[in-house]
Figure 1 (spheres, rainbow, N blue to C red):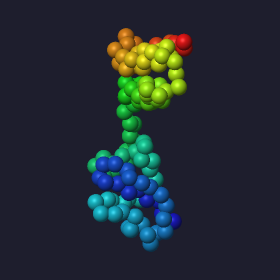
Figure 2 (figure 1 turned 90 degrees about the vertical axis):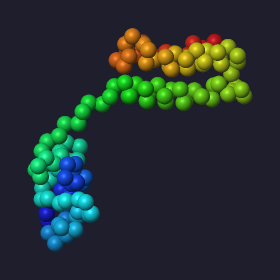
Figure 3 (figure 1 turned 60 degrees about the vertical axis):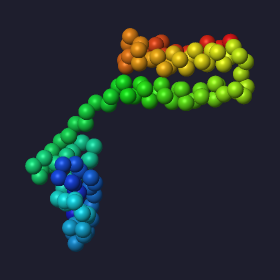
Figure 4 (figure 1 turned 180 degrees about the vertical axis):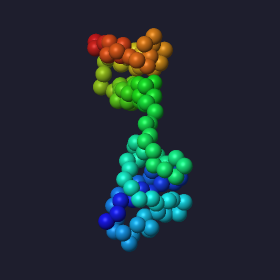
Amino acid sequence: MKSFIVHDGEWVLRSGRCKDSDFEIQAGPGEYVIEGEADPRCHKIENGELVPYTPPPPDKAAEVRRERDALLKATDWTQLPDAPLSDAQKTAYGVYRQALRDLPDHVNFPNLEASDWPQVEEQ
């Protein structure tokens, strides 16, 4: 058995083990295969050599927006004309949803504390 790394000249695409006789067929068109072990999340290829790679930190603002968007989506139903809510409840959800949309303007954005997130004021 032989360990292999398939790459595109810059990024590790996959790695694994195969029979010695199958080593060359691991790479497809536009891909290269070298012997070794790698994790695509923490290695890349530079000048034909395997080197450690540290991905950039996640975009905190994008993460907060994804969470905010999920909360908006989860409450879309509250704004439908036939939602089983009182007028006061629909208004409370409307205020909550506007506060969610306004989060990017919050003074602490994107480093929001739990208390910075709006809550529905139940009526």
